Image (cartoon, rainbow, N blue to C red; front, side, top):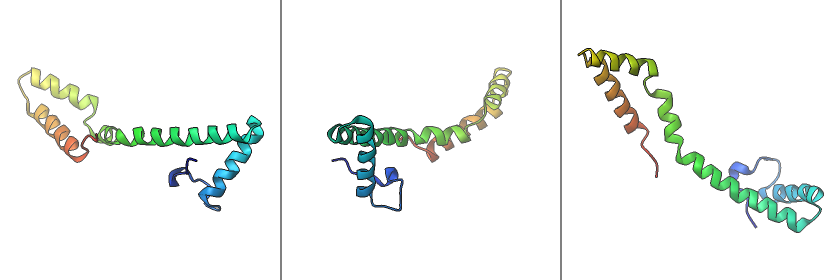
Length: 107
């Protein structure tokens, strides 16, 4: 029996156990079998737990993306560097390193 994690426990007016029972009851109406409903419910809970883990594992990417220099900034910095002035490129590179330190990869 898969227990509903707090994140999946949506109806706060009832316990996670009662919510699971209600979900299985509704699935039984659709699937026609309480055994099949329980199996499908538990499979879904396990799938959702795994998807949540995957989502959390790449949170650093979403956080970094919000703060990284824009494509325009990088393009201008590269163009200026090609023309012999690397000041802006050095600033963009330093900013990226700071962001990578602020939001390290999670493994």
